[in-house]
Image (tube, rainbow, N blue to C red; front, top):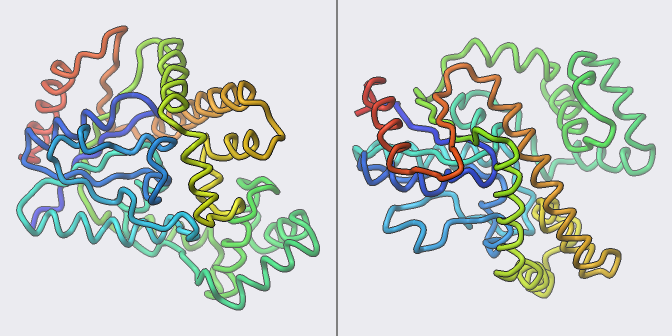
Length: 314
């Protein structure tokens, strides 16, 4: 069975959803979302999850599949998305992986030995309790003694990764650095061909992102967050850490004005787009297509078709 897949990547607001659908139609494929927040049910507006109209009859996977109260990890995503990809391949279709969450995409494509840990384990509960009692700096210092290389890449506020790195060490006897080095030597699960979308002019990207946020608010972003709260989703859930939802919570709680919340969402979204590009730029095999003032999807489809065909995907 072929292990070839197409990955449509790029920063937020760059047209990945539409391009994924066009490629799926062109190459008899199905879309697998690679967005760390589109996985949650009821979080449609703020995550820009594809609507039925935008899907245009193309099957989409990993959209709205997890309860927003669940603590869903990158390892869970890699496991569940791989089942979707394998099923698509087994039916002779082409998986089109669409999204901008680089860590999730890497975990899915590499597909080996991702250190997950047990989310309800006594060890994790103990580490979380120690974090709460002793503070983040104490656990980060502990990690420095065990795995200085890993610790050097983490900020004290990155609680989850600090706890996970300690958890991996205490469960396996291997540091996270050792684990990562070992898995890098294992062949990738899939053979990806990357199509990258970006703006030729960074100022145009910022303008589009701002317009996108305004449209989200107009479509009912704040009302969506209020509905999630009314349905019992905790304010401390991972889902509410998403850009747009955290700022909307501040407005609904009265700690921010509506205007300030909107401006904060725009700022955080622009910053996130920059981080996405930084992550993707490390990948030297992405074939980039740069939008000008007008997004020409027909030309981009022709460009992508040539790349995909030349790489022996279809």
